[in-house]
Length: 338
Image (cartoon, rainbow, N blue to C red; front, side, top):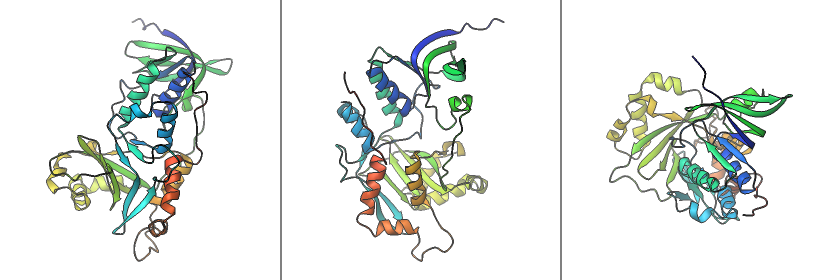
C-alpha cells in the first residue's frame, strides 16, 4: 500500500496549538506583516470546560488592538468582584473596580467564542494561515536546529518548514517533548469537578454570571446552560467515584441552589470533567494559598487564615483584584500599526 504524499508548507513562524496564546501570537505576527501558520489538532474550538475568563489585562490589550468593542458584543457576563462563602460567611475575594483599565471587570465568555473571534480577525491578514485537524507528531531539524514540524491531517500528512517553531500546545506539549525540554509542575491542593446543567424557568438569576465557591460549589452562567463546578481535595476523585455517583450528586444537591431532581440530568461520570485555572506561576501560587485548607489546627470559625484576613480587610480584595486582574507584569503590544 502506497503512503499518502506529504504536502509541503513554508512559513516564517509555525505555531503548534490554537489556544488563546497560539492564536493571539499568530494574530500579532500577521498584523506585523510576518508570515505565520497555526496548527490546531482539533477540527474546531467548541469544547466544554475550557478556560472562560477574560481578565482586565486581556481586555485592555484587546482595547489597545482596537478589538474590544466588537469583542464585547459577543455573549458574556461581567464580574466586578469575585465572591465566596467561607465558613458560612460571604466575603469579597477580589475587587476589580479600582483597576487602572478600561474594563474594571472579568468577562466570563466561552473560550470558543474568544478563539473564533481571534481566528476571524487574524484571517483578515494574508500572512496568517490556520490549519485545523493538524496533529503534530514530530519536530524537523536541520543541523541541530528546529526548522519545522510534521503533522497528520484528514487529507494526509503535511510538512511545515519554518524559521521558528513555537509550542503553545498545553500541558502535554508535543513540541516540549520532542525538543526534550523540561517542565515544572505547580500543583494546586484542590481539583474541580465540572458538570453541565440545562437552564430551566425559575433558575436563580446571577447578576455576575459567576458565583462561588459557596461551600465549594461554583456556578457559571453560559447563557443556555449552567456550568457548575465542585472543588475537591486533590487526589480524592477516585475515592469519590468509588462511593458512587448517586451519593456524590446527593451531596451536591445539599449545596446547589437547585431542586434534587435537576441533578438527574447527570447520568455518568463522563459528564463530570476536571480542569485547572490561572496557569501562571505567581497567580497559581496565589490561588494555592487562597484555596488551601488546613484540616489540622483549624480556626474555630473555619476557613484558612488567609481567607479570614481577606474577609476582615478592605484593601486585600483590592490587592488581589489587581494581581488577578492585571497579573504581576503588565504587557502592552508594540508597533500597533495597521
